[in-house]
Length: 584
Image (cartoon, rainbow, N blue to C red; front, side):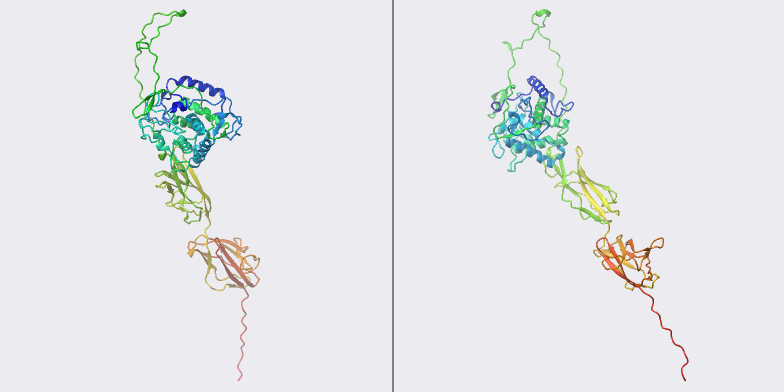
């Protein structure tokens, strides 16, 4: 089926000439792709020569064949732009079918939400989609983004391709003997079983749906904490998709081409690849009713042995043919086992707020809100058993319950990790709480918090004695008040005491009772603080020479206030008692 759908490159010795041509064409195109990372000759688990080593290679496609067409040497005329171009602008190769383009851009948006540090560009998905399936056979998809018939690669039976025995019972690829790459992004069934997505919301994870396949490809490329804005990470991501240097260079060239500009074309009108490549082997029957490519036979002599050329003499003459000695066989070096790639369910993807509200408290109080985050894996699902570290930064003296500025909490089954309660310090001001998770590429969330002054919603005078003083004298009785908050004594509350003319304190008073400063000068406003029991005894109050009734107003943070009357009057004079001798 793949043979009549498209001509594709078989990996092996026959790729050398095609790879050289691909590299030369890419260099000639002046494409603005990011440079290949130094030493990028293989993927995360690349095998020698770009060959597939079998089902454990870790390549998404099983290293199946792919299109080798390179983009035109004349790129779209929007240098440095990744914006859409009008349909009439640029070559036909720059056009991407509407549904396919929409799927790539949707996948980019989704991954940006769940894994912003990956920085996945939709143009990379477009490049892989071009190389893997010619953009879903030129955009042959229905209204839901599904191909009318499955896009299947050749059977991976080890004859010119990787040997991957059936893993899905033929459920995805229709082959119960060997696996085949499936769909517009060419996932092998075992990889799709792990990375498959439902991006179009139809309740199915369908490798033949371009929306599902594009999102799965995006999450796969971001695995392992990669940042695709970094050339080395991008190379590793592409090579993990298909472990071939030639594949990497082909994808890179299309990536650069699409970065310079593209435009939308109607579904079904995309340009299909036409580049000549080594034909796939002719099919031969295999057990189970499937067909497998048969490698081309090697040239042989009528006797069944290959001819051995004799040495050539100078001048063009030659000696009689003599057998060429067989060099000693060097035992192959053992290949180290590939480093296992964590599954997406085991890969940390993102950290998000789990509903933490405003973080505000008065000095010395416990914050009502607790900092809570939710961890998600690379598939966007809640991730359990992930250590999350919470750190307080600031000078307010705020600490977590237990007296620590840094604590580590393990996320629960729903992915949430909640820090211990915050205990506000005695200094007012702003501070932050930062949540950090992940080691390869940590994610952080920072929360702003504040400590405000202690508050009292009520202030009352202690005692009921009338406060009276003669002009020029001091008041004999001390003034004591108590501040409370929600009925509980409010220690450390700031209290402002002001001599005023009216009960609302709108008009200040410049005569009558007063306090004294350290130099003995009159003061009619003081800033004071309640003690540990919420009590406050005011300093001595003095009367000037102006008799009358005056008001002392005390207010607190939180709205508590009280007005106390102070009276300045001369003492009452007592009439002298008459004396004399009673009459007889």
